Amino acid sequence: MANKKTKEAIIAAQKLEKFKNANKKLNLYTYIGIGLIAVAVLTFFVKWAGIYNTDIKDYEVSFSGFNTLFAAFSGNYSSADKAYGDIAVPFYYYAAKYIKTLGVFTVISAIMLLPVLASQILTLALKKQFFNVVSAALLVIEAGVLIAAFITALSMSGSDILPIYCSGNPACSIKSFAIIPAIAALGAAVPHVFASVFYLRSRNILK
Image (cartoon, rainbow, N blue to C red):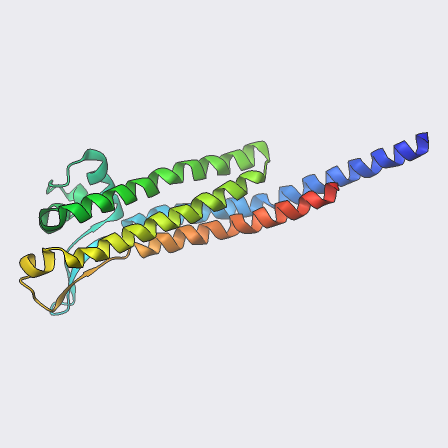
């Protein structure tokens, strides 16, 4: 009876050690995820919206995701300061409703990165791979919010910007690259999804 208990204890200890080793390898996915999140943050420099003119083959006016964040956090959408890009004119002047909505989505997406990073830190500090599941879920939601921002930016085509500011010039159109951060967020979610799957599988080792 004693030998049986000893064997069971040894087997249990071996399983636990195997489980711990399997989870240590998953930290690589967490580091990759953190790197991709950094890339996602950098994509906030892309044009959130702009008026592209095919006659000059360039943007007449535009603003980035960071410009939108500055304006939304300060509540000063009408400032001509460089920190706000060209949000004031013509975008806020002719499409205030769209710009404010875009600001809300952009702020939400930025704030959501905080719990994502917190879950990454907890994964590494506590060695709890469960937080990769949380990160993956949050990043998918993050992508959804950014897609909403992208749609809102393109929706400005239905405002007074093109008819009035552009005088109905067919060469002008509203463009947005806000879809790029959404793709980046989904890309950052991929390693966490893999880590989550492997983590759930590794739990079978203890059975």
